[in-house]
Amino acid sequence: MSQQVEQLRLITNSLPVQISYVDAQQRYLFNNEKYEKCFGIPTSKMLGKHVK
Image (cartoon, rainbow, N blue to C red; front, side, top):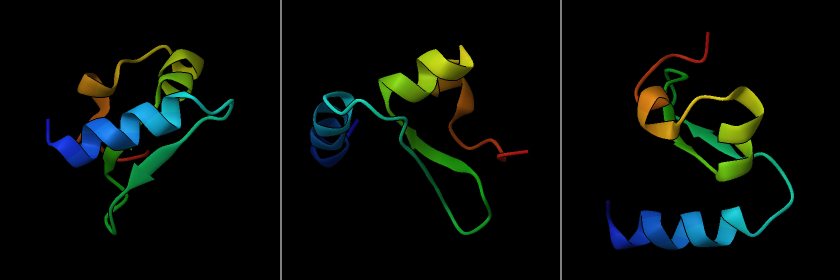
């Protein structure tokens, strides 16, 4: 994981909201811990998959 992604994860995990980042094709690129807990799926299983 790149240093930028690690920094983003540290910042977003401290917030009380669900955060997800998707690309133009609506594929997951990033999810914070709150997003993972809400859907019960780890980011590692969601990365690169389509939102639908």
